[in-house]
Length: 184
Image (cartoon, rainbow, N blue to C red; front, side, top):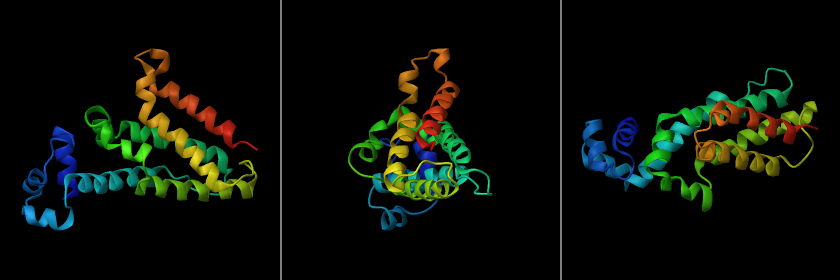
């Protein structure tokens, strides 16, 4: 059903997706959908959680004994690039950006909480190996989240179509910001 919801959102956006459309595409009854999700908003929230959690899982630093900070910085930059290139994220930003506003202005979502836990774990490992400056990992993780969110969600706005402001150029700037922020 989440795959069907993804297909619907990619086809017409969140506002134009209905639970009936999702049920039809999934080959299930409307009641099957309604038993699990009372409305499109909660269905899309679960879909975003699934999709973004997959991005987070793919870019978590491996923890193979190498210095933590360089791996963490590269993982964060890769995560922003992966999210920026994610078809669902791109569609929502393009067509229905208001869907993301609650997660920026009112409350954290499940994926943001997952990211914070992963960041804190990585920061603690960097504190132990001395590659990340000492500090409160919860506070540092939240600062990192604010930075990476802004690059993922607003990078396209400030680029203004200027070649020197390509996504890759912004990735380099993000890399510098994160590396200097985390350096001991």
